[in-house]
Amino acid sequence: MIKKIEKIAKALLIFSLAGLLTAWYFPEPASGAVTVSAQVVAGIITCTTDLTATNFGDIDSSIIYTAGDNSTTTVSSNGSIYMKAISVGDGSGPGLATTSPAYLIPSPDAAYSETATLAAGTEGYGIQASTTGTITIATRYLKTGDDVGGLASTSAAVVASSSAAVTDEIVEIIYKAAVSNSTPAGSYEDTVTISCSTS
Image (tube, rainbow, N blue to C red):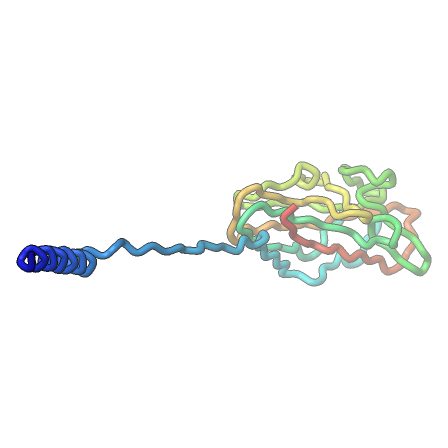
């Protein structure tokens, strides 16, 4: 009877040792969790215009005038981008304005059309835009010769745009104006603000 008990005890000890060895050499696989996170950023754009002022000089009704310097705006984005322009004008309409006397040479013509063909002796003022890059110039401003696109004063008008990312795209703007014999003499001015946005 005692030998039988000893055999059972040995068997239990061997079984227990086998279990310990199994646990030691073959542990249960570890488990864990990985938290994956990301911060999605809004569209990143840069928009730099090289020019702070340009001048038509002395003008009269004999010809169509082009400002002495063109402005160039360099744009980059990691997504869609819209380059826009807006005219201060006289505060109520776009154009070249003087305060003494109060008068506005409207952009691009007396009807504030989107586009116009300037003519010597007829008041008008507008811009042309071009690029050698891949950004798309708006039809309104993709003009040559005496054709110009009119500036807006209530909301910025799109000059150029791209639905894809762009890097150092350059948009050049030419400023053109014409006056009539009845345009009052004076110092005229407009501030054209160029901006870029993702929509």
